[in-house]
Image 1 (cartoon, one colour):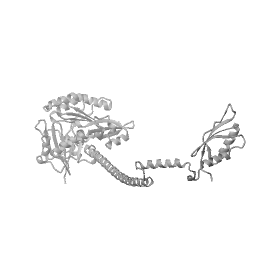
Image 2: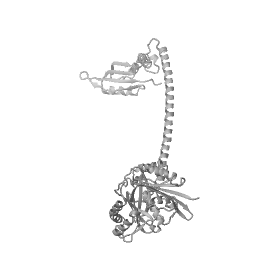
Image 3: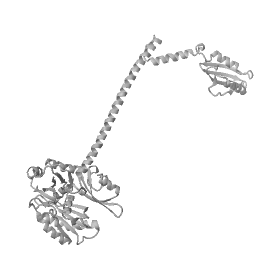
Image 4: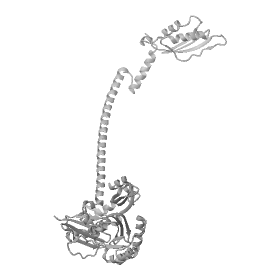
Amino acid sequence: MVKRSIGIDMGRFHLRAVQIAQRPDGFCVEKVFARPTRRSTDSPIDMLRALTAEQGFDRNAEVTACLPHHAIFFADIEVDAATLQELRAGHASSLRDDFPIAAEKAIVQVCSARPSPNGRHATLVATTSADLLGEQLTRLAEGKVHPSRIETPITAVHTAVGYNHPDYNEGIALLLVVDESVLSLAVVRDGNLIMVRNIPLRLSRDSDQESVGRQVTEVLGREIEITWRKLFGVDVEADLRVFLVAPLAIASDLTEAIQDVLGCRVILADPFARVLQGEAIEDTSPICLAEGLALRRLLPREAERIDFLRAHTAQTQSTLNLRKELAICGGLLLATAVVWFAGLFVHLSRLESQYGEVKTQIQDIFQATLPGEKCVDPLAQLQQKLDALHNDGGWLASFQPGRWTPLEILGLLSVHRPTEGDLEFDDVLIAGDSIRVIGQCGSFATFSGWQRVLEEMPGMEIVDEPKPSKDAKTGRVRFTLSLSSGRRVP
C-alpha cells in the first residue's frame, strides 16, 4: 500500500500544497497546488476545501502544516543541562525574558542543541503562543483540514533542501529563504540549524517580483555579515555555500547579487533533485516549504523534531488532567463539608431536644420546691433561695453537722486563754466562719504566747496578721485578732 503525505503552506499572499507518495523507487510528488491570495476575493478557506473535492488530493493522507512567520520566535541561547531538559519537556518558564510571549501560553520546541566549551549547551529554540496556534488551527478547520503536525517554515525548508542536496548536511552552510513577506536566514552546521533570523519585507498586495528582489538585495549583504560576525566573530568566508530558496523570477538576480557582494558560492535549491515527479509541473512557485512539510511524515522518525501541535496537545492534556484532579479534590472536599454540616445539624438538633427536656425538668423542680413563687429565671431564683437558706442556717449549729457552733468557739477561746498575763476579751464577733476578737493584755509576750496557742489549735486559722499596740495611758497592749474556723477535726 502506497503511503501518502500532504504538506500545506499558508503564506501571507499564497496557498501552496504538495502531495508526496512513498514508492519503492523513492519519493514522488503526485500533486502540486499553488495559488496567490493577493486579491480580496481570493479565499484560502475555499482553496483548502477544494484540495480534495476538486484538485484530487488524497482524503486519507496525513497532513502537515506550518505556522506563519510572524507567529514563530527564535532564540539562540546557552543553557545548562537541567534547563535543556526542561525545554525539551515543554517548560518555558526559564525563557520568560527571551520571547514576547507569556510563559503560561508559550509552546516551546528545541530545534538543536550542541555542547559549548564552558560545559553549557548552545541551543536554538522556537516558540509560539497557544493563541496563535489556535488561530491557525481554526483557519485550517474552516477549510476542512485537520493536520497531524504543525511545524515552522524554516525547518520544513531545511528538511526539503537537506533531502535533495546531501552535501547541505556537511560542514557549515547558509540557508536563505525568500518569501513574499519575510527573508529568512538560517545558519546550518552538520545538518543542524544553529541560528535563524526572520527579516520582514515591507511589501503590499501589489508588490511584483522586481520589488521583492530589490528589497532582498538591499538588506542581504548587511544581514549576512551581521549574522556571521555574531556567530563566529569573523568575516564571511569566500567558500561559504549559500543554499537559496526563492521564486524563479528573481532567483538568478539574487544569485548574482550574493556572489558579487559576498563572493560566496550560491546553490539554487532544486525540490526535484532526488524527488520524482508524477506529472509535469510547470508552476514556477517555490514549493520547497510545502514539500518539506510533506516529507516530514515520510522520513524516518529521527528527522521529526518540531511539532507544536503535539506539544500543545500534551500541555492541554496536562492542564485537563490537573483540572480533573482539582475537580475531584473539590468534589471530595464539598462532600466532606456536606457530611460535616449534616452531622453538625443533627448534633445541634439533639442538643436542642436535650435542652428542652432539661428546661422542663428545671421548671417542674422549681414548681415543686417553690410552689408560691412565680417562675421567671428558675436557676437564678433557686440559687438566691439557697443562698438565703445558707445565710439563715449559718447560726443553727444543729443543722450544720461538723462545724463549730458559736458557743463552742467561745468555749475554745476561753479554755485556751493564758492563765497568766491577765489577757482579757473586750469584744468577740462571730459571723459564720469568721471570728474577730478585740482585747488587751499586760505585755506583748503574753499576746504572742496566746497567738502561738491559737495557731496550734486544729480547726482555727489566723486570717490577718495582728498588729498589737501599747496604750500610752494605761500601758496595756491592745489587739484585734481575725480568725477563721473550719470543720471540726474528729
